[in-house]
Amino acid sequence: MKKEPIALAADPDDPKDFDATPEAMERAQRARLIRMTRTGLGLSQPEFAARFHVPVGTLRDWEQARVTAPDFAVAYVRVIARHPEIVARAVS
Image (cartoon, rainbow, N blue to C red):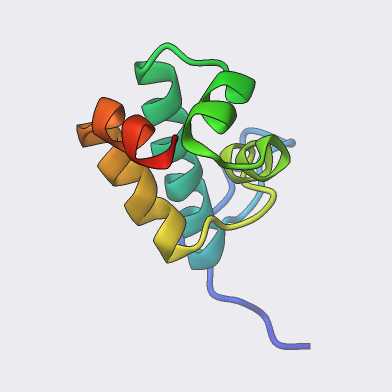
């Protein structure tokens, strides 16, 4: 079994901490971007999902980093962050 490289080593003083791979770090950064965009707009997950036509389960998976948000989704969220009203009108 091939061992993945470590981007961030576990804290030896924290027994619950774990090593993070580059892929896990990327997934976490994408999750943070999506969550911060949504909360910055003051929307709950169901509100954001409905307003921008994203399945709420998919949004939840992205925000909790269970699934890596694809590049197109990250781009879409970046546009939403800059122009939420325009995007909301365009998708309604």
